[in-house]
Image 1 (tube, rainbow, N blue to C red):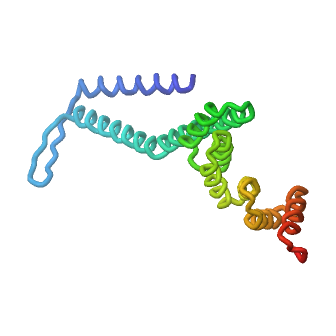
Image 2: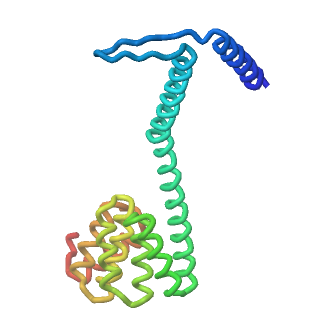
Image 3: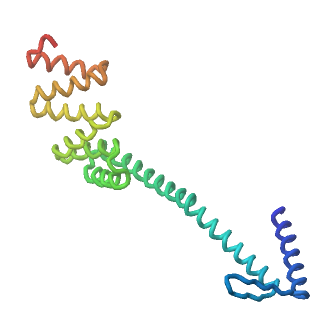
Length: 204
């Protein structure tokens, strides 16, 4: 309501000024760098008003580019992240249901939207194991070692691979690293003891 009243008042003033200028247009002469420009007062006012409006429009456009575009980019990024999280959830459900095709598709979507995030790596590793692609699964588990948040999971995956291959020395190295991260984890301490006995490391 207040904006409407302000607009009406502004329009009334503008109409009054235009009417006054029509009755007494006046004349303006500008000398600049050897050029002489003659025009009416009303034309000069209209030119000044138009220039002001253009300047305001450019200022708002620049502000939108700086702030609005950034906000738009942020919303697009948030939308991609939400779709990526949904793909990860769908992928783990597919893994639990034993559907490798759906899990692989969800993992590919998560990779495209989120890149090599921790959950993406874990989903890709689980999917590769379902498909019998042990090399890819091992690669993803190794990538997980680079992130403190997923290092323990990566160690467990590589430990399972070493156990399947019968590589007790590699398994011991991995489980010792896992023990350093989570010394109170029961299965870690059990595996650590069994591997040391198997390798004759009774001191350890």
